[in-house]
Image 1 (cartoon, helix red, strand yellow):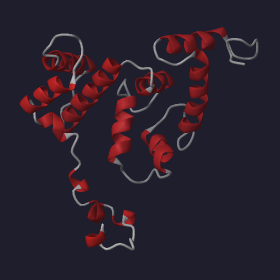
Image 2: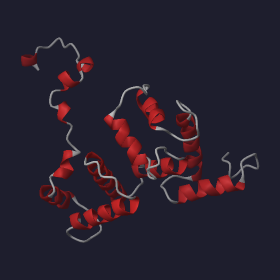
Image 3: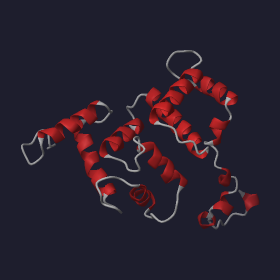
Length: 197
């Protein structure tokens, strides 16, 4: 039984917070409550301050918080909506909501677009306010939506990227060109020779 149905120690304010988070995402109140349990485990894995730090996220993803990891950093930046160096519970739920199977495709595209704009700005060592970043994302979205239908279809995206090739740079991981050199521990010894494959 969820907190909003029981008369236990959970407060009405907490139930309202769960309801507000659920209403702004594809999750139900019960699912948000379950996500809170996951959040508590993640946020206490390394630092234990009630927030998910980069170290907590890296440890949760890779069971290692000592090495820098591009994927973990990008995921952290995506979830740290307030850009304050920690992931709060509300940010966690809202960010996961984008990945929910019932999340609108437009929301997924917009999120990816924002992630790419923020990554480009970070790689250029540009630190801009959230309002400026939002303006850039909105302008980018309207420029890419050449049909003006509020959606970016693959043809529109291809056209936009061809006019702005720096965008695709974030979708390219050069060290994957020769994965056996970049990640020698991933090399499997095959019984087949290269010519037999």
